[in-house]
Image 1: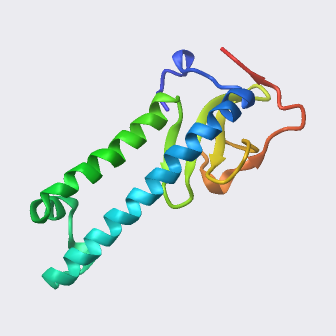
Image 2: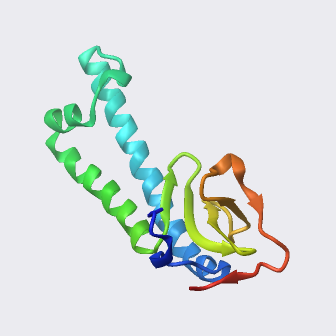
Length: 143
């Protein structure tokens, strides 16, 4: 999040919940395309005799230029999350955070792929491990 929090958009739980159907589609595609990328890297590793961990995506594109489209698609999908106002936090768990005011504190509403509504939040300096259930009244304020 930017240091200039006064100008950052704050989301309500309801606003994030309205975005979830779109986020689900984006995250589903992101995860599917990332599997394709991982499989391509594994194939390249097998063909080159190098460990997958030693390969860079640039090696993949040099070997198979048509994989550039896959990489562009992944970038576009992450940008779509940004355009929704979310902060993409991780592919494996499918995490997206949204700035919000929770009980007078600026924090992040934390949505995980598969959740039908946002149910958790964490402080700005916390992460997934610091997730807390939303307060009962769910008093979220818009700026």
